[in-house]
Image (cartoon, rainbow, N blue to C red):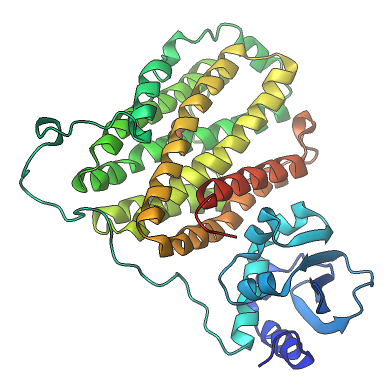
Length: 426
Ligand SMILES: [Fe+2]
Ligand SMILES: [Fe+2]
C-alpha cells in the first residue's frame, strides 16, 4: 500500500478504531493533529477521547490543535518503526509547529501505540525489539580460572581510559561524608514550611531515597558482567560508583531522620509509573545480566540505569530541589548534599555514555537497541513527573509542570545526542 494516500489514511483510521489499548491510553486526548509531510501532503487526524473519527488529507492551513512537520524520510523512518515519534520531536527531526510539548509528553504512550497501528495498517508487524546481534567483546563467558593478569603481564592499567579518569576523579571528589554536612538549621526551616510544601518535598525525597536504594541493590550484576569480560578499568571505576550510591542512600536516610523526622511507610508517595520504573524495569534490566551479559543486555541495562534513571529523572529532581531550596535560601545542609551527590552522579552518567558508546563502536547495529530502549522508557520517565504534579492542586512553591517536563525532555535529548554524536546517526 502506498503511504500518504487516502487508502492508507483510511486503513490507519480503521486500525485505530479497533485498537482498545490505544483508546485506553487516549481517553483524555481531545485535540486534532495535523501531520505535515513536507513537500508532499498534510493529513488531519481527528482524534477525540480515545476515538479516531477520521484521518483525511488536508490543505495544511487549517486550524488543527497540534501541527507536526517533517520530511517524507523522517515520517517513513517513524512509520517503519525505526524511530520513536517522541524521540524524533526531541531531536528536532520532527518539528512541533503548534501545540504543547507538555501535552504531547503526557501522551507519548498513546503516540507510540498510534504509530504501531499505522504499521499494522500497512500490513507490517511491530517488533518489540530490534533483531539480535551476536556478542562482541573479548570473552563474555565466565571462566573458573585466570590465564594471566593484566597488571603482571606487562600491559598494566590504562590510566588514560575514561573509566580510569573517572576513577581518579572519584577519589578526589567522591570522598565526602554525609555525616559531615551541617544540617543544624535545616530542621527549623522544614517545620516553618506549609504542610503541602512539606508534603511535596517528602514525596521528592521518598522518590530519591528509594531510587538510591534501588540503584545500590541493582548495580552488582553490571560490575560482575564487566569483570567476567575482563574489563578491569571499568570494574575499578565501578567500585567507586557503588560506594557512592551507598553513600547517597545514607544521605537521604539522614534527611529523613534529622530533618523530616518521619519513620512511617512512604511507599504511597511512589506513583504507578515510578513503581514500574524502579520496582520493575530497573531490577529486571540489571538482574538479566546474571544470565545474559550480551551487548544488547548491557545496553538495555545502562540505558535504564544511567540514561533514564540517573540522566533524566534524577537530574530533573535536583532541578526541583534547587528551585525550591536555593531560591528560598533554606535547608543549606540538604542543598549542599544534593550538590555533592549530583557531582557523583555526573560521573555515573559519563560512565554510562562511555559503556554504551564502546558497545556500539564494537558493534554498530546496536545503535538500534540503544534507540529503542530509550524510546521504550521515555513515556515512563515523563509519566513519573506528570504523576507527581497531578497529586497537587495548586502545586506548592509555584512549581510549573511544563518547566519540569521540558527540563526532563531536554536532559533526555542531551543523552541521546551524547551517544549518537559522531556515530553516523543523522
Ligand atoms: Fe546516587
Ligand atoms: Fe548514580
